Image (cartoon, rainbow, N blue to C red; front, side, top):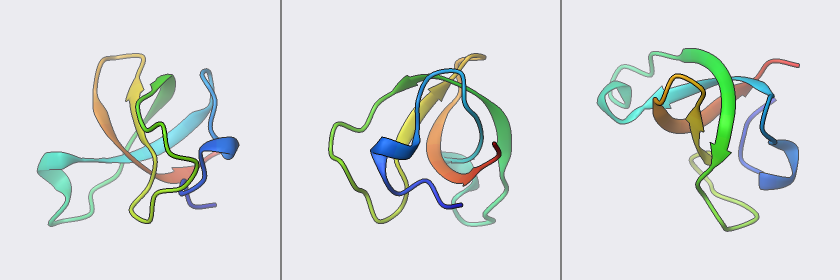
Length: 64
């Protein structure tokens, strides 16, 4: 599932994100959502989140 809708994402959810530095390659980094940073209900490139380890990126894959 893609992470384009804010309603599908919540703290504690396991996701795969694309970091800003990895946008060209599309490399996915996996982790657990700590905070949701995008306030809009939808974003075409993915909702921006902060993982528990502090990394910030846009959700590409929802694991659970």
